Length: 502
Ligand code: BES
Ligand code: ZN
Ligand code: ZN
Image (cartoon, rainbow, N blue to C red; front, side):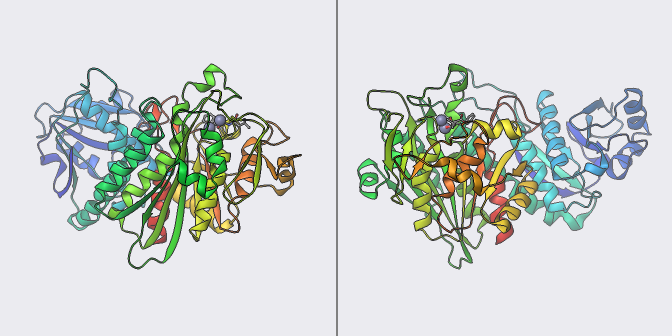
């Protein structure tokens, strides 16, 4: 699938499918669609109206041109309401258009640059959104299908514009869209992989492969169990002890020559969360291979940094293990000592993520970053609060929180700030240790008390915690470009963040 941009006339370009657009409730067409309709003698508008096509978001209308123009078929995609038009409408329309192109086996697709002429979108942003929507919208995880045959993608997709002045901007947007989408796909592939073939060592090896592909632009340090013992990573080791597979701590470093700032991205990495001895009921365990999605997003984001080349030093960190049941498992009531020397009573072994993050956040603090962002499939409670499509964000710093909300909006990843209320901190007190891993409030405010627990391990560092338990794994398609399965949520928010700051 090759993307390109060219100056040209849509009504004169031969192709298998010509993609045009309209806003919801259109009476007449505007811009590029109007000019093609004119070449079609007004047939496009007539047929669309006869078929009652309203151009709502996530809808489209296809017709044969019968030789009236060189394009064989036209696909009219709905952009939704003009007042709601944004990069997100573009991603959605672009994903749908490529899905339709695949369903008819189109080899050459020509598309308008949705919204470059109106809506106030920048041509670069628009082109980026088109590529993201297309690449993510046709994503499939076929590794474990015996027949790998799927619908074929077109060979070439040309973004055609009559305005020759924007082709460079569109080309830059195409490149950026490919970088953002590929990083998201890396995360999706990791999360979709069953825990059987993605054990802690496998996640480490796949990170190694990603780092190797950057040809020295990312450095990597790996700490094994013996080293973790020396470092005092009692949280990670404690949760890992019931599994047959060894835990690791992985530290990736992207260090440009003149860095203005230093960020640390930390990901939760439980390759499978059975709950441990506080065992999960069967239906809550089904998708627990997803419990390393935080780390997957960090790995995906790191892979893109050499290509984006921001002037920010970025540290990607995760502590990986499996939360299992055995005679060696950590027991409810056991006490572990985290890397920052705080002691934790593990009352519930299913609240394991925060215990491992206690160590990885402590390790991140030692790197003296200007900001830490952690991503974690941390609590079911966050899904009760916000549903399955929205990231719950917590921060000890209003500026950091604001920057993340802005980045998430640009990325099209819904994110909502939840309060880190200090009065709940006391509910994490333990009778025998410094902290309890669960709150006395039990399930009430569970996402908040989990975040308050994490805050104990970030010292004074400006920090944000993204609880991605809901959107990390889509149990139903969330939109046209987020199909069932791993979503890669978080990757593009992190990338927008470094892009904006550099
Ligand atoms: N990995 C889960 C959270 C989760 C739930 C992620 C659903 C994705 C989808 C986490 O380790 C967990 O089990 N949390 C418990 C905490 C409780 C024991 C305090 C929860 O949310 O129930
Ligand atoms: Zn758990
Ligand atoms: Zn978990």
